Image 1 (tube, helix red, strand yellow):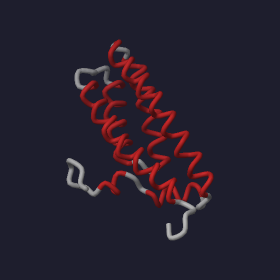
Image 2: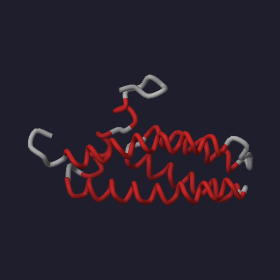
Image 3: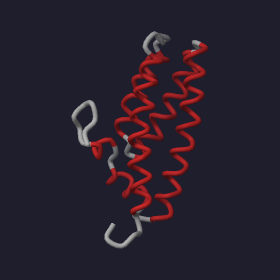
Amino acid sequence: MMRDSDEPLDAAVDFERLRTVTGGDVELVRELVDTYVEDTEQRMCRLDQAIQSGVAAEVRIEAHSIKGASANMGADAVRDIAFRIEQMGAQESLDEASSALGQLRARFAVARDLFEKYADSEGKPGA
């Protein structure tokens, strides 16, 4: 399956980074995935509210947090779009922020699905 950018879906997440961060600890992988997914979903809601309210400083802060967490998890596609939104907030130019948030949600959905499949497959025979 390919994304709009013609990159393989697996390219949306750098699993080697996640393995390095966790040292291969299966329970830690699951915990990090759960925490990342829950936190990012909450932050995207706050980001949406900040965009709708036109509060550029909040847009920058929420996007920055999503960018950092995504970078740590190896969700490079999510990190990249969060960086773009962070820059919009920093420049107080939110005209395209709603559209970018839609892209962020789409990329996050792909990464979330990949992370959850990865967490479920870790520790299983043949994984």
